[in-house]
Image (cartoon, rainbow, N blue to C red; front, side, top):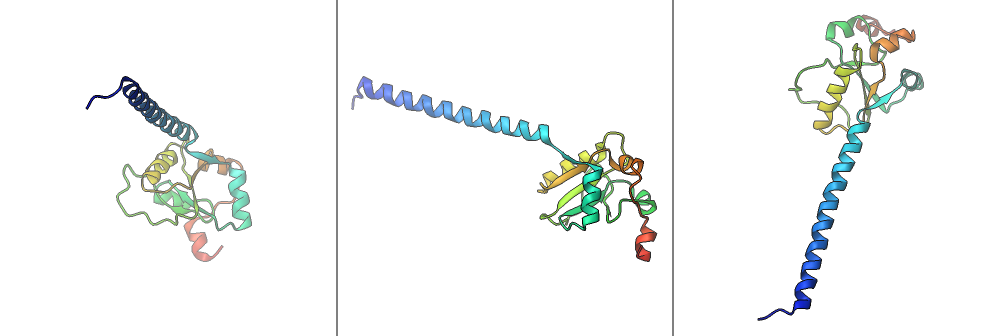
Length: 154
């Protein structure tokens, strides 16, 4: 069966349009991913975290990425010890409906940013990093507690 030249051009035009749409959607996806990377991680200021703690917000879970012994000495009130590791090997069981706020005693929040990336790979998307981390919190003179203080009920 012989195709008419008009039909062949029409099929070619549709094929070209579909190819362009396919390429454009791929480019759009790459652009969205790049935009998300530029925005990742989101940061939270010490002032904002302090406000949430004072209000008793149930929407956040604070994760201290310092070694356990450092966390036992002093940490942000309510923070859970979740030390930085090269690779997360244990099953993570944090609530997915809460915002995880990570902080570390690092010059540029690098351990918390790294842990945030690892948690995203495990399907956690509500994550923020405390801007300036532990040192900023301490410099501002905000409350800190020790593990012993928390056990005593302070």
